Image 1 (spheres, rainbow, N blue to C red):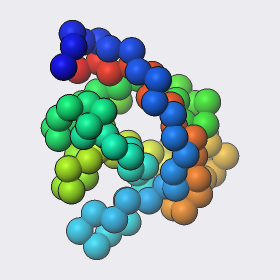
Image 2: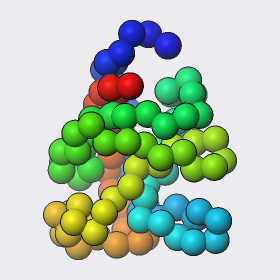
Image 3: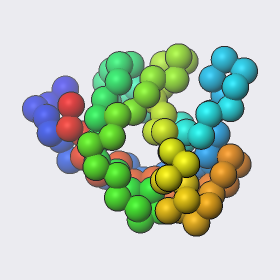
Length: 97
């Protein structure tokens, strides 16, 4: 891994909702994240979700080797009330640690 922080330009569209041990969480799974970050451990990033800035947020591990971005009820409200199954555009801008 290169020195951190590291600029990223990783944009994708995905639905809100990640199955965690049979429960659906209001998160967005990041495709190819283990390869992108070269780790299966938690990382911190700056990102936007549908142009809503999210600074220094922790990406959770999925338990399957990838990462997911949690979207709280307050964030989903700022996204116009998006809920499970609704799609969002995520742009990972910078890896902090």
